[in-house]
Amino acid sequence: MKLILRNDMQGLGKRGDIVDVADGYARNYLLPKGAAIVATPGAVDQAARMRRARDLRDASDREAATTVASTLVPKVIEVSAKAGPEGRLFGSVTAGDIVEAIEAQTSIVIDRRQIEIDEQIKTLGQHVLRATLHSEVSFPITIEVVAS
Image (cartoon, rainbow, N blue to C red; front, top):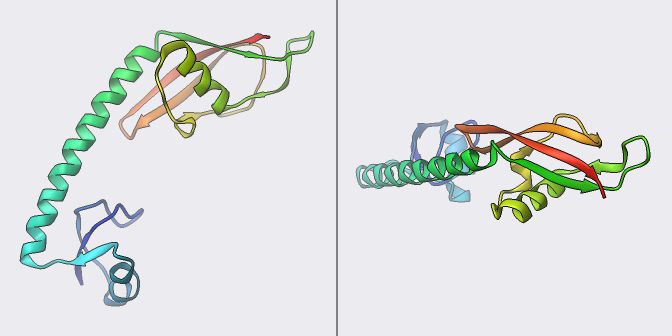
């Protein structure tokens, strides 16, 4: 059955895409949840408009993410944490702490889920993390953990 997706569906497609799915999946899941509509000629035109709007929004999001990246890459964000005499922290620096420090020092607001911490930060010093603001914009963020 040919359907037009009304929402982004992981593994199936994005909003406005025309997909061919099994009749049962369409009838029992996608249509009752309102996640898709039947692909009639009028709905296909509507899907084209939805895709154009999605592409424009995606381009503006990518441009904004690139601007944020160009601002944050050269900066070293300072994060203060309680530490012992050997330089070990009494906890760890979290993505929330990093986001708060970025906002305080640069006035840039990003979501904590966009910060990727590979291993826990439990020592003082410089650490390099990865931030993904858009599917095509991923960049390193350098933080300096200092004792408070």
